[in-house]
Image (cartoon, rainbow, N blue to C red; front, side, top):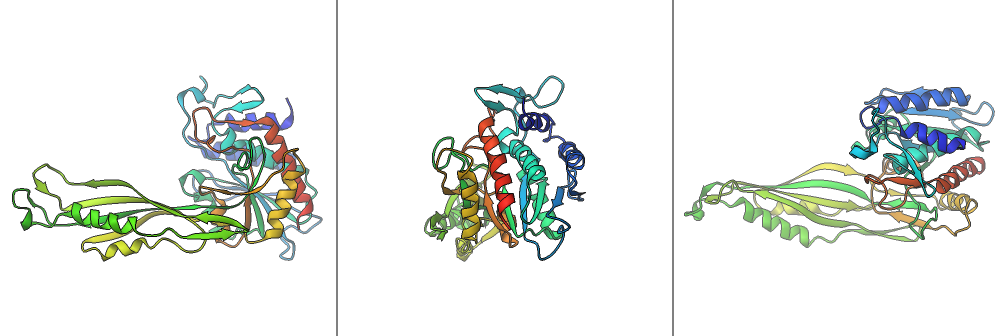
Length: 368
């Protein structure tokens, strides 16, 4: 068993859903033992983010030295019953060149690859490794770090970008959509259903608001030659309390996939009497703003595989959105394939893990 597989197994086995701090402890200890980097642990919730820095000579922290960050997260979603071993650790098994277990794809495997690349690279500029908490809870750790000054010039987020252009091909995502989750609240006046004219039906008002949503055009844009289209869909309607009562309240949830730039005009629904609009979650989209960096990342992955990779677009949000929103030039590159994360059969290809490790090191060596 080589070092990358061993480290991946070691990190995956730690039950990170119950205690993010435990896997953070392991990552911090590894960095302190295996590297001479400046390692810090901040006070973010659930155990804190782990951030390490190293660079050429004494350039760590030099404002004139370009900074490249290798970024991941060490929290995971809850495991299925058969992903937990009898001793409480996460179960790991190998079959057909893949490691199976919670977090192998999203994204403990990528963390192991980034750790080894961070140690082995001869960086052209300041090199940062960062593993955040709370990505699965809306970017808690990333936002905490950014609010306290985490601001690399460039970043590679190790979320999945494999298998988008072709099966078994590590690609580079230069953009991804965000997600805005919101609710339209319609209020009315309750009445007996035998005399509906004495009340104001909140469900009718909610239906009028839904008609507004159906007629809103979702924005579209281009990122480095790639077309992105947002989307807007009503996902739930909840109103009424009895068969014979005119409802006085109704709620409509809306899932919006956002793109860099313009947002859908959901506030237009508030033109309906008795309707208000509340945003519960707003995960930002990401767009790489530097074609040269995107090309350098693509060259790095092209050099570690026989297949021809492509620059692609991901359909869902990652911590890359928070970093891009704060001004970091960002791409996404990692071993997970579409549809692999969060599943009861989650797995990652060992061969792809090695390619990603090599690509991260190559980019760190070359990019300044």
